[in-house]
Length: 240
Image (cartoon, rainbow, N blue to C red; front, side):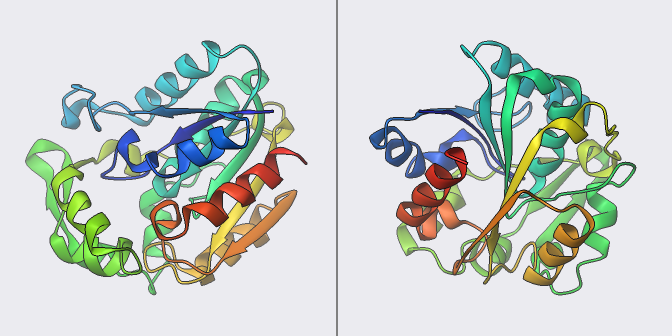
């Protein structure tokens, strides 16, 4: 059985894995959810958070595990798990990009978002440059992220989502073939996604091929929309 380390995406925290983690544990796996700096219960000032801070937090958690893990990154945290694979590759059995940004060396999340005209998430974000953050408006929750989720999940998100640090978005990933390139990677596509569009997911996979790709008929928040099937897919990817 595997240890899954679960890394949330923008605006979220480890709370977003609350439905998925018990399903993985039911299959005999261990599930470890992480709050990145400036998110969830972590008190780091949002305006001070960098991509290096994200990376250091992930590697810190990986080093506490008994062996190499299956590292799952959702959405924006694709950049965090990529950078962690560069910084501490020996702690990772394989990467799972869950409707996540899968970027080549030298590219930033901000650049990738500009290349996704089908995404509706940017229409519902407010820039707070003075405090180094983005704030997600209600339409971003209902229309872009949770469009196929229950009203209960939407209401919870309204209470729980927080601001997104700006610096990680603007920082290009720095990846080498010797470190990052030696780590196995897989991908979970979300075919009704309105935040990271299916077209952009396909484009990223063409540029950065993965060992295995599975697809789900959900929007962006598959761990709320269809946690049972997501758990089955992750279990299957872990057994490759």
